Image 1 (cartoon, helix red, strand yellow):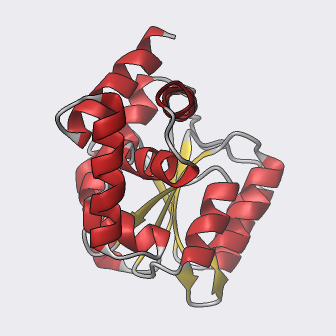
Image 2 (cartoon, rainbow, N blue to C red):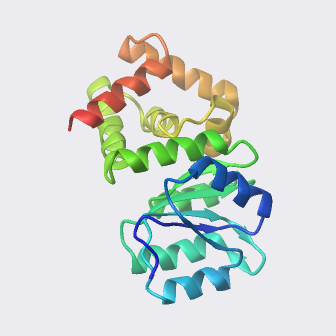
Length: 202
C-alpha cells in the first residue's frame, strides 16, 4: 500500500507529469496512472493518497468519471482537476465532486496554490469557501458575485474566471467592481486575503 502522503496523478502527458513532479518536489511521492483503466486498478489496490491530480481527457475515458469513483470510495479526497477544456459542464461537475480546477497550459500557479492549501490543513479549502459565502451574505453580494469570490480563491485570473463562468471578461470586471463597492476594499486581492485570514482563524 502506498504511503498516505502520496499524491495520485492521473495524466497521460509525460511533459505535464514532469512539470507536476518539479512543482511537488520532494514533499510527496507521486503515483502516476496514464489511463483511466490504470487509475481504477490503483483504486482497487486500496492504496491511500493525500490528494489526487486528474486530467479530464484520458486516452480511454473521462477523468471525472474516474474522480467520481475515487470520491465514492474515498470521501473527502482532495483533488485538483487539470484540463485544457473550459466547458462549464466540466467545471460544474468537478466542483460538485469537491475538486479544485486549473486550466492548461497555465496550470502551475493553480497547482502551487492547491499544494499550499493541502499543506495548510485538510479543511482549509472548505473553510475558505465557507468564509466567502458568509462574507457574501454579510455584504449583500449576489450569487454570481460570490461565485467570482470562490474562483478568486483558486488564484485564477479574471480571464480564467470568465472562462469558468462562461461569461466575458467585461462581465467579470463588472462583478468585481460591484464586490469592491459593497465591501469598500480597494482590490479583489485584498478581498481574497481577508477571506483567507478569516478562514485561518476558524
